[in-house]
Image 1 (cartoon, one colour):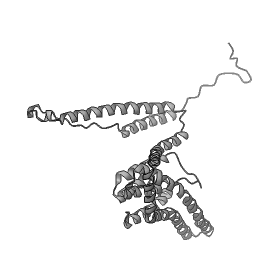
Image 2 (cartoon, rainbow, N blue to C red):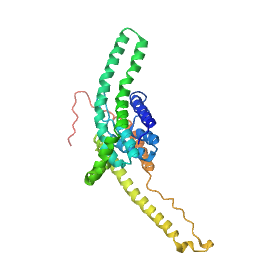
Image 3 (cartoon, rainbow, N blue to C red):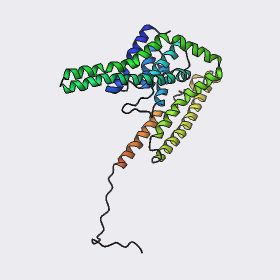
Image 4 (cartoon, rainbow, N blue to C red):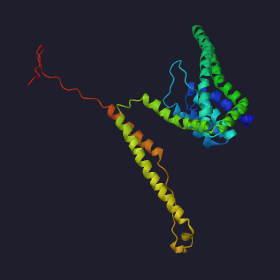
Length: 304
């Protein structure tokens, strides 16, 4: 059950995040940040970050320019995290059954927000003609209201009145296990779709060697770290047996298993280093070859 104060906080955040995305651009309107805030409000930060990061990867290569609209993955992250925590829904299932449909449907609210904002844009134009600076400022601020309502109202009504509908859907999916498994798999594949969209618009062919290097480096380090971690777990389990526990104190073996899996931060640092080196190399100016001393009108013979 979602409490009234949680609905209020998430509604206020939904109203703010779109205004932040259009003006301040502090990343507060990103899906991963929405998952963080919603997880914090709902009391399950891990689930919020998982859902938010999955949707962030899904829209990794999607952007908008001018009057174009895209799926509202941020509001999808808010609703998916809230219902996943409140009703105990599996995060992968929440992504496929709640986040993606909601993000798609809210595209129409995005269009409605754009259309209603044009009213205040025309009032700003009229205020410019009159040199009414107060009117320009006032109508500019009023233009944020349609944008805020385009996110706040759907989130509020979904959180306040959509709980029973979501519960019915989840209960129905529980009776059709093959469909639930398929939706979970689809939710797990969405980050891969985001990477595919991103690679579609990147100069992959020109920088294919960097892509191959990153893939090979990550694969080798993953295998290495996984094996070392397995050895550490095995040694820890062996030292915890009764045979070692009965040894005299002077023969006791101290071992702390601090082996972790491969660090994505380390891989990212290597990627940043290669990107900086590539940028510096691309900025080098090519020295032009000196012009040949050929008299005007004379054709240089290049046949030998």
